Amino acid sequence: METYAFSAGYVEPGVTRDDAPFSPRAGLTFLATPDLSFYASWARSFRNEADGGLIREGVTPKPTRGEQFEVGAKAILLDGRAEATVAVFDLSKTNVVVSDPVDFNRVIQIGELTAQGVEAEVSARPLEPWTLVASYAFTKTEIEEHSNTSILGNWLAGVPRRQASLWTSWRFDAGPLDGLTVGGGVFHASKQAATTANNFFLPGYTRLDLNAAYAFGEGYEIRVNVDNVTDEKIYITGGFSQIYPQAPRTARVTFTRRW
Image (cartoon, rainbow, N blue to C red; front, side, top):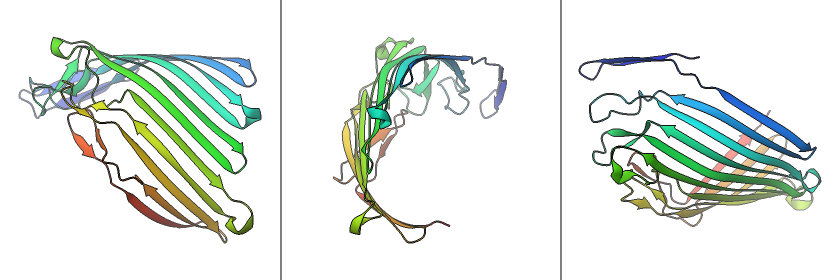
């Protein structure tokens, strides 16, 4: 049991509130074979929203409370050269703080927000010098309960429905290229709502990153990273009607000496 206390003296009259949340968690894992296991978990959460902004009445929001169920499986494949994880989750939250669809300088609290989805990841080393990591996530968010019926069924701002990534690298450990590692990855995100009212969506994007590293001598390494190789115009949002343009094509060179 934890107790949180805060005061907001910048509103008139000042507001003081004490909260004593109980956030239990439980989990269970079943080992079906040495290489395959299944798991299930349940948890309740609590977040004090004193830093979430002010609602229209000029006071701080109530705490956000959540409950999550998750089931999944983990497997070791290819004689130990690969690992795979898949999970399905169902999350519900009450009093979620989001941007006010009318006044962007204020926030509102949603009666109930739900999120359901699936996540999967595979990491593998098909060959000794080759590393491969792939992931996929589908997340459906929806405003289920709120006094403002115009936003019922809307997406939560800042959460794309689909995200996927593929990363790979190859390490040379013999011949004239000994010490060189080259790699790269692709990350994709579908469109996302920029506002609680869902009257503006940010487009989806695909970003390509490349990198190379060369290790030499006693602990020396030089690394080159090129992010957003195709110079895509990428915009994301933090979910409070704020839009953040991401960096264009960017190159970095790093030199490291380890003792």
